[in-house]
Structure formats: C-alpha cells, structure tokens
Image (cartoon, rainbow, N blue to C red; front, side):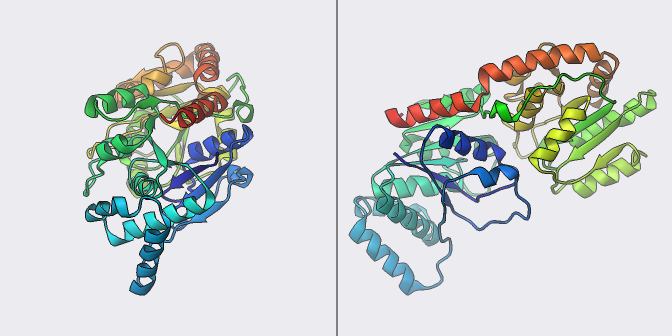
Length: 394
C-alpha cells in the first residue's frame, strides 16, 4: 500500500534524515506520497531531493473565504466515512487546523491511502491524527527531540497523539525510555535509529589529515558551539595549533561571531554558513575530527541523536561529543569516539588535544565507528523495520 508522509514543510535543508528515509522506502519498491502542510521557506536544497520520486501534495493552510470553508466541510460530511463521528474533535482545534485535516483526509480517501506517517509530534502529528480519524485510516509518528522535550507555549498533547497512533517511533533508546515512562499506558513505542545509505558514505581512514576541526549544525543554543570556541581559545593559549570551520546558520550567528572576535580567533575559527550535503562530506573527508559539543538548552530543547555524528562516523572522521541524551548510544567513549561533559570547554580542549597528538588513536576510533554504523544505522535495514510495523498495524 502507499504510505502518506505528513510533514510540516517539505523540503527543508536540514532534514536530510527524512529524505534518506523516503529514498530508502522507494529503493525497496514502497510507494510514497508526501503531504506538505506549509509553504516552502528554504532558499537552498540538498542534492538528494532531486532523487525523490514521490509526488508532493501541498495542503492549503489558510481559509479566508467562509463560503469555500463551508463547501469543504460539506464535502467532508458527504464523503469521509468517519467525519461526522469525529466532529467533536473540532472543539480542541482551530478552524484552520480542522480545515487542513479535512483536506488531507479527502485527498487520502480519494487516493486510497490507508496509512499516514508524520515526522515530529507537533503540527504534522496533529494533522495526521485528525485526518486519519476523519478518513478511518491508521497513522504513526516519528518523534525526534524538540517535539518531545521543548516547552512550547501551546500544549503539544503528545500523549493523545501517541495513544491514538497505531505506533510511535523515536530515534534513540534515551527517548524511548522517556516516552515509555511518561506514557506507559499508551500505544506501542519503538526505537529505530535515523540511518544512512552507506553506499553514499564510503569510508576513508583519517590518515595524514591537517589539524582542522569541523562542527556542523544550526547555530542555536543546543549545539553548544560557544563552548567549542572557548575550547579553541584555550588551545591557542596552550600553543596547540589548529583551525576550526563551523558550518550552519541560525539565530546565534552574530553572538558567536562576536565571541570569536572578542577572543582574537578570527584567523582561526570560521563561520561559513550552510553547505550542501556533498560539500559537508568533502569537509568531513579532510577534517582531523568532527566536534559536536551538544548541550540541553535552557528551554529543554536538545538533540536526540545528531545525524551529523552518524555521517562523520560512517565516512571515517573521528568524533568528539558530549555524554548527554542519546549520544552515548552512538559514541561509546574510547571505542567509537570520545565523550566529554557538556558546558566544559576545558575538558573539550583536552580531548581535542589528545586526538591531535595521537592520530593513530583517531584511526582506531574511526574504524570501530564505521563498524558500529554498519551494524545499527543502515537505512535500508531500519526502514524495513518501519514498514514491518506499518504492515502489522503496530
């Protein structure tokens, strides 16, 4: 059967994990249709988007004409098998939300789609739940991190969405334990790691690489890049030669740039903005290490398990990150990479020095890391597991 993917926006530059998942489904012969709830806001796109064959259907998200809105509800009443039975759901949602869910329900009813899968437990899951109820089909959710831990101004009602779903997927055992503890009586929750097509990420041993550090991610608090900059200042003070490139954009850019200047690191730390996945791969192939100094932000936001770490480990670049959330599932300290406490530039500087001074140790970590990725993060194996849950209905 065709699976309908419900996404807040598509495509999004940073959400390569969703594109990877869809491509893996298609490689296995699974038919996919993508339903995007909001307009495209990106100005640049990843190359992999061009390889997705699934049609993208955009769901109208604003209703200014009351006559058209009434016509929509009338059609939903006449067409959808469970619209009237679930009309009470409208009490807890805006007119725009109900309208968008009705449009999606009508489309999947017309297309014969019997299952919806939403990425993130926020808006996409809200619409998927309502549309599935209206059309009398099933739905599932992949919950990542912000949708689980962030304190939103409006309630996310994740418990209700998990309870009504056929099942919920999350991307780390850390998340899995949290969700099962918070919602013990709800529908099944499983862990499936975000995977990679490993043929697209060939391994290159980290031999004879210059002392160049790489960090990749949105310039937001949870990435902890300010601690990396402080660590490089300490390396400079100690006479350890290195350069650092930070790839990404975000609200903290001006703050990070000011920090770099204040510490006299303009010749050493470079903020270069967004880059395509192909460009990021090239940087990773030449970097001595990837550093991901993740933290839990003041509002509770955090990375569940950063995809960039999986990519770096697959390619053969030694990784340093922090011992929080799901990261220790991926980086086994001293075996597949190195971990430091969050908010600790001194420990980070010491660990960076260790890898710079012992390249053979980095090669050992990189080889182990690739083996670990092959065993647990193969996108074809992981999407097959997702399809099995859909086929079983939970």
